[in-house]
Image (cartoon, rainbow over all chains, first blue to last red; front, side, top):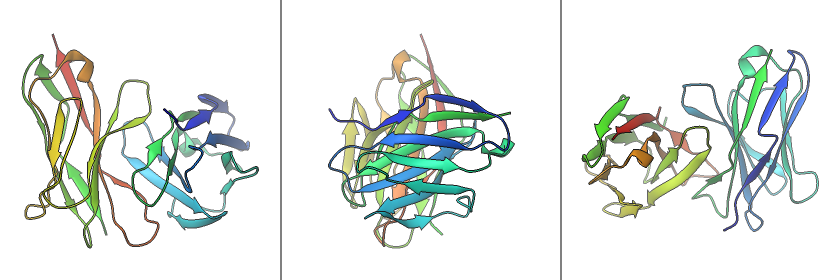
Length: 112
Length: 113
């Protein structure tokens, strides 16, 4: 069964450093998403992406964040200058239409 | 805005007990409703869904019925197992544009032998 994959599974970085989180969505899916889950809290939407552009973003998704689909298979989330409060589990998801979203296993980001 | 409210956890049950996790929602229009499960150390897995009123989603012995009149989507299982220990998230998506999933806070379930 096809699944969403994410790399790395864990990332530790110093405050102020840039990180890139990578996702490979399910191959025939058209809509892509990033969510995050701060430890013990609810899953929060960051951004959605369709047809090579951002279709919606939350207030969390400020100028420090960017997304890209560089090669037609990968979908990346970049955090330009990480802050302590960016420590969270980041989930990528994809869907065929604007309906059932399938999630990857997540990348746990720790900012020191 | 759209929102999902789940019962507070944690919920601790003995094996073979009956499980109910309450979920109610507020949404414009007619959302689709989902339950996702997060096992310890893992990501979110879709457990079941329902896309219109009176639909019943079911999977792995879990069931939930989309009740428009009470704006609810309670998760039930007749006999829980230790392997059901996880965090359960109720979520909705509306159909106006490319809107994201809106999640509840999650309910942690612990099943003891």
